[in-house]
Image (tube, rainbow, N blue to C red):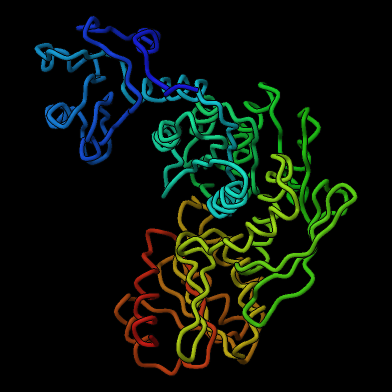
Length: 462
C-alpha cells in the first residue's frame, strides 16, 4: 500500500471549502495543527483554541515547510496574498474533523474506540499493549480524546498501521457523537457508566446516551460491540446491537473473569474463561478495577485474533498509567498515586483496593474534592462515607470545600478524620507527622492538584 495522502479532491469535498492557488497543490501525507511541530512538507490547519489561534502562526508554519494551509473564511482578507495553496472553510475545527474521517477511510487499520466514566485510559493502554504483540498499533497519546484529540490521533496513523486504538472523552452533550462519526469504529467498548461529568450530562441515562454513540456508529458499519455485563446501564441495552461480545465477572459473559487472589501489594491473580478455554494470569498492575480494565482489553484482543499465549506474553509488559492506581514502594510506606482524576465510583474502587494491600496495617486516605458533579456534589461527597468502614488503623485526611461534607459524615461515624482548610497545613502534616509504616492513598479531581502531595511524600520517604 502506498503512502496515504490528502488530495485536492479531499479538500474540495470539505463542507463550504474554497481552494485558492489549486494548480500549485501537491498531495500531502502530513497534517499539522501545531506550528512548532512543522518540519517537513505538510498541510497546516489554523485552529483557534482556548489559548492560541493557529492563524497567528501561519507564517511560521510556511517558513518551516507547510505547503498548504486551511483557514477560516473570515480570515481571507488577511491571508489572500499567500502564494501557496490555501483553503477557506466556515470552521477549521469542523473541517479538521471532516478531513480526519476521510483519512480514517484511507487507512487499512481496524479502528477500536473506547470510552467510559472510569478506566477508559487504562483500558486503552492495556488494549494497545496486548495488540502490539501481533499488530502495528497506533493509540491516543496523553489526553487526546476530544473533538480535536481524536482527529489528531487518526492523522498520526499511516499506511503501516493495523490497529488504531482511540480514546473518546466527553464533558458536554454531543462530543462523543461528533468524534464517533469521525472514527467510525470497527470495535466499540464502553468500560462503565458512572457519575463523571454529571454536572453537564444531568444523570446516568444521559451519560449512557452520550457514550453509546460509539456503539451506534460501530453497529451501523457492521462492527463489534463490547458489552460489559457487570454494568446495568450497558447490559440492559445489549439487545439493540447485532455483533455483540459480552465480557465481565458475570458467569454468562462470553469472556469471563474471576479473581483468584491478591498478593500483599494488591496485584491480581485472575482466571479468564472464553469459549471452552481458560487460563490464569498474574497482572503486574494493581486492584480489582485494573482487573476489570484488563478483562475489557482481553475481550478485544481475543476478537482481534490474539492467542492465550500472546495475551500472557503481552501482559508482562503492562504498566500502571501515571496517576491511576500507581503503586510506589518507598522507604517505610506504600504510596498509591491515584491523582489523575476522581469520581464517586473511582474513589470507592481506590478505597477497596487500599484494603487489599496487607504490607502495612495502618492506612491513610488523602482526598480532595470531586468536580463536575453539579448540584448533587455535596450529596455525592457525603455518600462516600457509606463505603468507608470504621477501623482503628484508618485515618482520612480531606481538603477542599466539598470534602467538608465527607469529613462531617465521617465524624458522625466516629471514623478518624482531619479536614485541612489550606493546602499549606496539609503539606506540613505530611512533612512532619508520623505517617511511617502506612499505606497511603491520594486521590482527587484534576483541579485539586493532588500530585503536589504525592511529591511531598515521595521527597520525604525517597
